[in-house]
Image 1 (tube, rainbow, N blue to C red):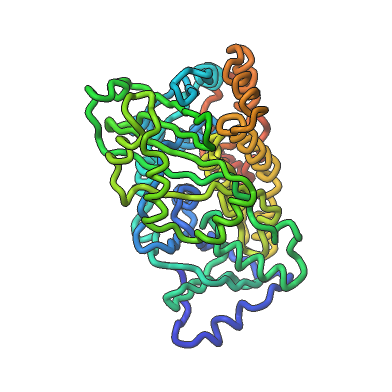
Image 2 (image 1 turned 90 degrees about the vertical axis):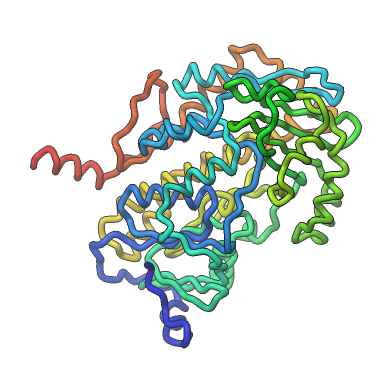
Amino acid sequence: MPFEADTTSNTSSTSKYTKMEDSNSQAVLDPPVVLIAGAGLGGLMAALLLEKANINYFVFERAAKVKPLGSVISLSPNILPCFQQLGLLQEMEKISLTCDHMELYHQNLERIGSVDGRGFTEITGYKALFFSRPDLYNFLLSKIPPSKIFMSKKILSILQNDEGVMIRCSDNTHYHGDILIGADGAYSGVRQSMYKQMDELGLLPAVDKEDMSVGYICMVGTTGPLDPEKYPALKDSRCHFATILSKDTPHSWSTATVSGHRLAWSAKVQLDKATAKDMMFRNSEWGPESNQAMIDELYNFPTIHGGKLGDLIDATDKDNISKVYIEEKMFQTWNYGRTVLIGDAAHKMQPSGGQGAVAAMQDAVILVNCIYDIENITFENIKAALASYKSQRFEKAQEQVNMSKMLGKIIFGHKWTERMLRTVIYNLPKWAQDNTYTKMATYRPMIAFLPPVPNVNNIKLLPQRPSTRYAKELANEMTS
């Protein structure tokens, strides 16, 4: 396990980590110890990669028990080759469905248009996979040894210097490591502690002190198994994904068939700025009463499967219904000293583009690539590796945030300009959609320390920084 500090006396353990030094400590040849804050999708992906890289790591999750919540989630060809490298793609295909079209309707169920997903498959050679989010989460969790995950570990603060990094948890335990990954979500405690340290030293940009913007409230859930005779779309081997827009209210809602004869559903309410600010002030924690009020609003909305959205809500375990804000912000500072951020802790984006989980996983891939290449575990080398991760990911992550924001307006916006743009976008000819897919397909980060998978359709991929350590290992194998 990670080195646990003496919790009976805080003096010696904390004084060691109160000041950031620039001096270079003596090189350590052993792999680093990596502490991961957060057992969400991004944190589990980082753990999975570190496990494969044979780098020592431990995951610290604030909850006593992680309850996977959510609706449908998709993984695109921009990340699926990594799972092929890990030898997991075939298993993932068994718990997911593929989707040919994503349909859009008015509230009267008049069809607005659709996005044809077949072009992406033709271009990349991969089919986008659609999961129930709990299924994907449980799959990744099953690949991590239980001994690597520590529950009920709410991180209160971090301390770091040239000798190491230490996390202090609410149960009065302290853990030491060489690198800390903040994968603990949009309201990351690691980010807040890191930013506090930087702000006290005058190092934090003003933009990183600003609040996240909130545009929507979202409620999500996944039903239990349903009767395919009542919902014939469940008999199909592909995912039926549809979004419906209200004409007179700021609501939109989506349904998607997922494996196991279930329907994943979500509903969004678009907020104006004043309402968003007020609701964030009043609802820092959602309660059952708040959920029920929104359920009452949504209950009688129609679905393309017949019946009402309320039928699907009733078929969902109430403990598995969650209500969240859809925040948005691109943080400028991702790393400081031995601490680094991934996923929503670094870039919180709207889910409209289906890029949130993919982006977090891409972060993890590139970050672990950089950690793998640290041959001598010195403070300077660690800082250089974390800076390299940000330099490789930041621009593309910014593009993903921007695209998600734009798609949010196109898909869910209720302004007349957004409605007009939506009609155009959802009725583009196939060649125009394929041009977009071709551009999207060029970014495909790979695990640099594993054999690459074939570029099936010879896509012109963006270049990626190779692993110098892996190249040396291959050369040594050839000469031995």
